[in-house]
Image (tube, rainbow over all chains, first blue to last red):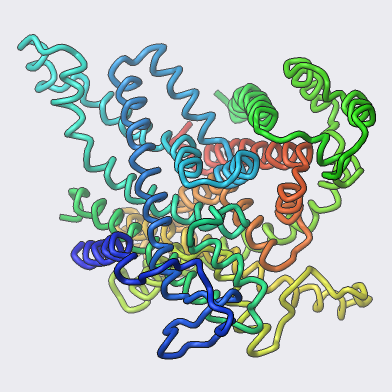
Length: 261
Length: 321
């Protein structure tokens, strides 16, 4: 757990301190260093427009982390709410929520996100919204199952006898019990969202006014024969970031698993 | 309830899901900004009465519910619409590309299933051992990498630096050679994209196979089989594989959507003339009918893959019955 947390800290630092680490506009290139290989002036080389790859990478971490974290928080909120309603109320509310969840789970996430962004135009907010709307059912399912199992527990009965209203019981007594598995899912959601955002960028649907890792790989595609660094480093950044969140999720899951302790 | 009854019930269940998908696809794309007539007549200024005629000819003047009803009616008859950008029926465009995508995804899935299961079993035999740790580390790394970047790395390594394999397309431009030479040539084109697409699934399948196999190997019936003198190979194939199969199958079946998405990205990297490449082009050309058809096809594939997975799962794992 310690290593992925440390890596997460480093990533967040990169994203927050990007203007200090790589001052100036990362998207402003210089004409005298087009496709320049690795050198002391440009440790990771430059791209076809003479932009410093290291600066682009540092600033690109902001897009990946913003999309990953924000979409995960949003899908978490939707998923917990939907799952709590379904699990607590049961009956037709449960059936309705689960049918809707099933429908959203059937939708091919990447292809749909691709078409929505292609039609609605690029923009970080839209990407976050699309991912969140497509990702919540998994969280909802987990929350619903846990809450349905806890509904008849003794501590819930005790709270009810004490006169606590239903929503308060869910919020204060039941939801804290399901926080563990939900956090595991949230970490894995961040990883999936970062991959999805990179895919959109690679399809040329990134925000043209922001440096993003996926968009860098899109440009690299045309220069594979002349500038290998344009492909290698952004891909490493995506892979490493996704790895960090997957590892966080796995570590959290392992610490929750009673068999593993 | 018998398997047939279960299959029929699942089929009935899939129909409203598919209908909802079709409606959503239509509403989403119809609600998005942009005018297909612009794509049809081009961006340059056209006489207004010509634009109006085009609009009328393609039924684009009708209100949305009418267009939706018409769209669903056409779908029911197997008509996927007409691609304005390509000036061809969408069904024929898709049919042209379907083979290439099936070849790529089928190969990737086949390779991933075989290798993933083999690696998972090998790792589970000595849980905690060197091979186990190597497989788990490799799987974790492979699972984190975007397949399109892996594709670029493969092109860099095997096409640009080593010059061993071609990097673009599904065959030589001059056409395939006759006989076995052509088959081998085709395989050379297939190798890199299929491997790039498969790696993620090898990782996924190896992980789930290992996890299930470790559990099964601890079970008492395996101990009993060992006590009866069953060979190690027999235990792995007869007991472990059979018990791990439903879980492995579920992972494969429920990732059909991700496989097709990965294929779209991989096809774009390798210039592979499949559905994914068609999607890329149709997005660039704002070719709504083609986008709709591909979205619908991918969604339908996911619904069907889930259905087949559930039925097979029931067939393999009697406990679910």
